[in-house]
Image (cartoon, rainbow, N blue to C red; front, top):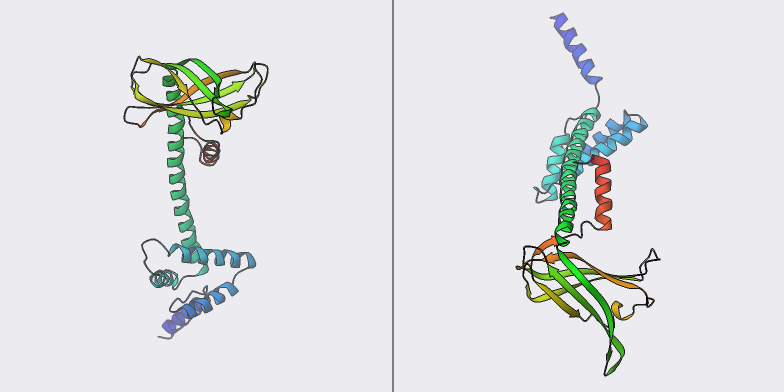
Length: 263
């Protein structure tokens, strides 16, 4: 019997010397026990403990909870009886799960952006079949205005196998000896009746003379060229689009691939 009492006393002493634990019975006991747990930690461990507690608390505020009270109760239950090491394990698991989800989402985003890049490259091949054989930029005098009307003359041939309802173009005015063009702007044309496969047409487009097209400053020898970058099909939806990614989207793709690698 005496031996059993000694064993029990030793066990009690060992238990008493263990790491302090959180008491999450109430908010007050949780705060008080948190201080006691922190007292046994080094300065660096205290910072880590505080960060772990914050992370565990925030993780309980999930979408499934409709009230802060319910979230707080879940948080208290998960922390009750935990040591600093156990709280750190909980936080580590939460961080790992977040990183897993972030990587999963990032890989999906990389795949989507890469798909758009690939689609743009495919579109460029198809768009060469919609040929702009002639492009002219003229100025037409107005009877009742001192401001001349800019006129874009285009001759096109639909060499695709699809009817086209709208065509999108990029117009450039440049001099052969200069690296930087005088003027670049996009415009589009809603084709009345569409342009069937194999058909050609000549159009005269009248851009806003009070806008950018009416304020072009370029020498007489500059050359006006036009390239098509998008075509809409008969249903009005995008058929081919060589636009690819914007500058910000490309930067985003580069950053994601640098962090997670290409797919």
